[in-house]
Each structure stands twice: as structure tokens, then as C-alpha cells.
Length: 204
Image (cartoon, rainbow, N blue to C red):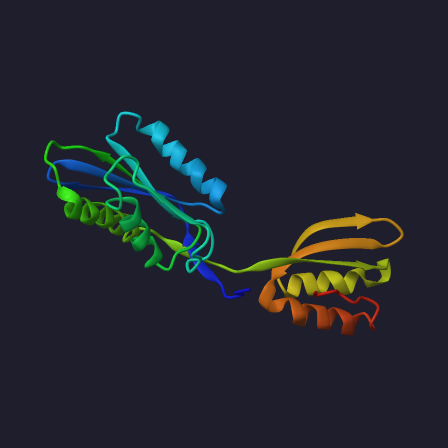
């Protein structure tokens, strides 16, 4: 598992380009997972039902992910739209990203090479304008503790900027937390140390 952070989009964006009177509207959005990618593609298709084509490409996970990816030529000649678009996305270093290029035909045929260049350039144009942010890889940890250790737990949670997913109160407290995977071993070790060995977090 790659635990290093990676870049994702901060917000959706659209940039329009034009080649020989054909208009190319490149929409890009942050999409976590294949279902989110497909939903965004469908959203743009519904927005432009009168377009000549709504071609798409996505990377559903990390930027280097070669499994959860996809593309569509949406009626353009095979290999002239979706694949060039995906190639540009894969060179961007951005993950969890989907792009849809809506084309309105301008009356002049571009040829297969011209189309591939136009669709690739449309994606490059929108990527040149995006803002990104760093996304860390997180995981969930579960542990239980007696009430006497709540102060120590709260101090560590604040120290590591941990998110508490749930806290179930009964004779003790059952916690589920979310933490950067790069910090989980240090967090578990400190928790064990500060509670005199009473809290042992399973990292397997």
C-alpha cells in the first residue's frame, strides 16, 4: 500500500478551447471512486444533450493507479478522444479526477490526428488552470479504554489531528478513529506508553 500523500483537485472547473470552429468545453471535477466518476460524466452529458460528443476520461484513485481508470470516445473515431485525454490526465500527477470534453462540431473535419491533438489540448488547457491540494492516505483504528484514560486519549487525538469516527460509551469507551497511515504506529506506541500498557491498538 502506498502511504504517500498525493494531489487532488480543490474544485471543479471548465475551460473552453476552439479548433477550426469546433468548440471544446473541458469540464474537470474531483471524483473519489468509479461511481463518482461515472456520475459526473452523466451529469455533463445531461447538461449538453445537443453536443456532438461528450468524451471522457478518469482516474478514480491515486495518480499512478492503472486499474481504476477509464475513458470513452462517445462516438468519435476509436482512439481519437478518450485515450489522448486519459494520457494527459495520467501525466498530470493528480488523482481522483474526471474530465469530460464536450464538443460542438464547427463544420470542418479535423482528421484523426487533429482530433486526438484537440481533445488532448482541451484537457491540458483546463489542467493548466486548476488548483490542487494534498490528500493524505488515512486508515481507521479501533480501541477500547476505561474512563480514567479519556484525558490521555483526548490529548493524543489533538496532538495527531485525528478524527473521531465514533465513540461508544458503556462500562468503557469504544473508539474508532481516522488517522494518517504514516502516523498510526507512533500514535499506537504513545497510546500504549501513556496508558501504562492498558491500551494496545491492533495495527494488523
